[in-house]
Structures are given as C-alpha cells and as structure tokens.
Length: 252
Image (cartoon, rainbow, N blue to C red; front, side, top):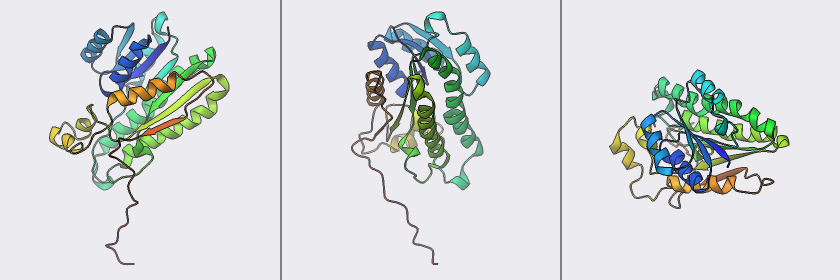
C-alpha cells in the first residue's frame, strides 16, 4: 500500500485528492490546521490515515511531525504540496504587508521546507512523486494578482528545478496549475471572509471543482514509473487568458 502525504487536506482540493486516493487504496498522511475537519474527513474516507494538525508555516512543528511519523506512514511515496492561499485583490501599492508575508510564508517557504524534509527519503528509496499545486496566476499576470501570482510562479519554477535535481534518482515531479476554481474556501479566504465578494467571483461561470483537480492529480501519479507528467494547466471552458493591458490615458 502506497503512502501519500497531503497538505491543506481539510477542505477543497486537498480533501478531494484524499477522497480520490482513498478509493485507490492509498495510506494517507493528512495535514491541516483544523483538527475537527481532518477527523471528519478521515472518518468519511475510511482508509488508514495519520492526522497532523499543523499550520504549514510552523517550521518546528512541521519538522517534528515528519520526524515522528509512525512506521507504517514514514515512507512517503507521494507528496502533494497543496496548502496555499491568496489574500486580497488590491493593487500592489494598497495591499497589506501582512497579507503578502503570509502568502510568501505559506505558498513558498512552507512548500520548500516540507519538500526538503520529505525528498531525502524518496532519494534513499529511489522512488517517489512530488506534486505541486500551483495556479494559472503564476503563468498569467492580472491586476491584483501581485504577490499571489509571484508565489505561484515560484512553485512552478521550483517544480522544474526539483525535476532537474531529482530525475537521476527516479523521483517524479509534477506541477498542476488550475484556473478559476470553485467549491472551496479559496475566495472567502482571499476576501477575508466576505462571502458576498467571494460569491461574485463565480457569477455566470461554471468553474473548475476540487474533484476536477483531484482527477488530474490521480491521473498523473498513476502513470507508469518511467513516465513523468511535467505540468498540467487547466481552466474551465468559460475562462481564457486575457489580452495584455495597455494604458492609453497617458501622453508620451
């Protein structure tokens, strides 16, 4: 039975990936901040689970959690770096520094830290698969995307460089960049709990859902061992990359 480690597992993409993997017979290490959500998910999916209640930004707790994994869960074959968030949609000069800092710590520092903790074991066993959940915001700029887009660009580039380092050890690395996605708390978190603003993001659209992302992850990890899916970019049919912005209000 393979063991998968999923961050941000209590809701959204993470919970959907956990459910998909449980159906496939995986043993799961599930990490998230909310213990009650993790316990409810573990009960629902009915597979062997080890739960870690932890904010991924807590480096000391993260190191302790990985170092003390029970023997049955200690050999991580699949790492899903899913935990991440966007905060705010204001232009760069009007954002809160605390929002920028939290996005960098969560989307970049924590992802790098956990990867550094798990990768050596994969290399020693000469097998493993690291899946990074990014965003099209890391590929295409948009007003208000500023640091969120930059953090996801980091995740994309980090994935490519991990692949360059780890391919010689039989480790696979996949970067998945979803577009407009609903069915999660993403937008409510972005707008600091403003449900009306969050709902407005999806008016008149049929966005991607967590199950769509879980399907992509599951497909990528189930490829034969000699096949690496480098990246997957997906958007709902209603979305496309927009034209470059041109400001015509200023005279030269």
